[in-house]
Length: 454
Ligand code: TRP
Image 1: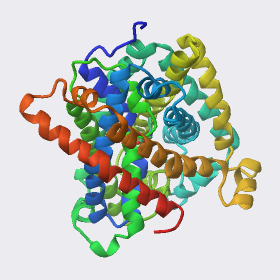
Image 2: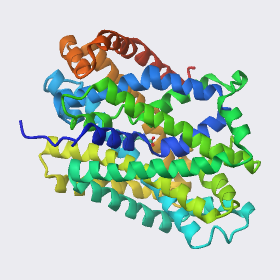
Image 3: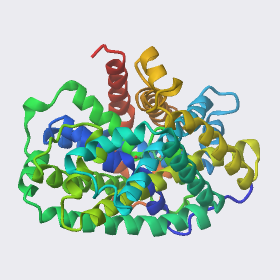
């Protein structure tokens, strides 16, 4: 076997995998779905979904990658034999990574646009009540979206060209601490605002009347998205992990950090929202419409706005790096391409696929045209298919394969290596139970919901 790249240290893996997990899902989506689902109980349900389903699948993925030292397709082939249909689960992961990455870059581009709006004075020069309308204006502007997408894809390609250690790990070691510091500064600011009490109450006081079955399933689906599981990213990063590291310990560190950051993001955003008397339930526009409107009214407003959108951008960038790495590792392992060729090939494919998403807010075919024809524009379709179909399907495949198909001795050894003796038996049994029963049942419930049965 050829020599596979490895992380320099456990911390390198944890930072890179946390960089993958912490993204738009934490700072943009989690706060707005929490707002739309009434806070409180929804947050609690989300924590249960992470602990009961998301984390077990995360550990399963890292295990598959580390055991085989292969990217998703090779990992499944290695463990189930050539020509086995399980290889399709790996292939689905690669396709999902491409699907998500293509539209993810558009949202990351919006962050760059808002940084520029804050710096060049356009944000401060706009009356607060007009600020929300800057967003539809941006979404409808094809040129701006394509320019930002180009910059974002180029920045992601640049990191991936550097390889596992000098690219991904090095970037993560710089970006993640920076992100933690920025988040901490924003949190301190939010703690000084008058809306803090209302925000804490909103987030942590249970209000059962607000929770619907659809909300529970949304929490579950989002736990997959947020942890970056079910599509081979964690598997790929796990394939660079040394055999001596404990899988439960590293998975818990990554999942724990991701979850803490989601909750902290809410503690940053909701005090701002409530201090300015805005609606918690405003939906996807929460971050790009309500938040800038409020931030610019604070002392040093433009600075807060730069800080916030830079944070969001860094989170998106480190996630995009891991998405591209899934595709690039596939090209290297399966098609025997050099890292350089694979990166340029898949980087270009993603760029081309991203352009229709960048045009989705405009009048043309990919935007209004498709919308009128099918009810969704290109961007919405990609997000819908990836989040509602590909991710649950991938999660189902991974959990069934690891829990029911993998040989027990191999699985047990891989899972318990590096874990203290006293913990091994119970941890292993608990993990396997969740992966065998709870995960598949929960995922089937998501499907039944997507097709409208429940
Ligand atoms: N976890 C990312 C977020 O919270 C989104 C995401 C889903 C992702 N799957 C991924 C990122 C795979 C990187 C790799 O925004």
